[in-house]
Image (cartoon, rainbow, N blue to C red):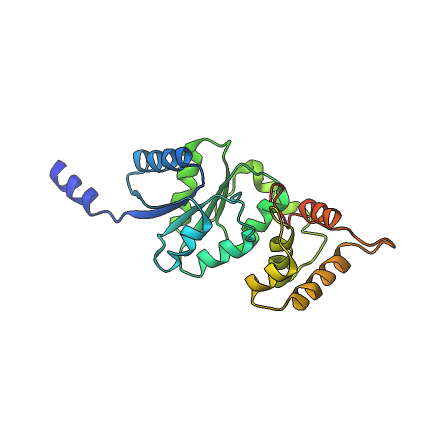
Length: 224
């Protein structure tokens, strides 16, 4: 019986997991914890930036553990949907616990959102659920689905443009256009549309003011 059990366990398929986390110590700690506490989990990929992960989009694992504050000015929604397009599932693990950002992650298709303040065993549960294609929502986060969605309604293209234009140290319209494959005039039209949606007051909306409004509405991350 013992020999049969060992053979059965050896034959149990492994759940392959990739980790995107820019802090090396935390990345390795997460990998060690998952493999030590979930016999069916094997951490395959360890990425320190979105660029590294994006270079491996065609060969991602069953589940991708995704940090979101990476300073790369790429919308969270775009990252999640790019990963999902490969057939992998997404579990977000972040120090950011803003309801609108959490809601955005779930709306984009993530199956779990685990704050870094949660216990490591919670992360294991979330990863195993995602591998089964099941959504995992912590009880204390369930209320995010009752929070009204963003007041400002942006198209995916507008979201990309403002993230590149206002995220981090920001970029020029020419820089944004080069990234999006459109002209600087095309970027300007997108930004005009965003400003019109964000503000209807008599005074022009400044770049810093627009950034603050988009952060408050969950479109931009606070430290981008």
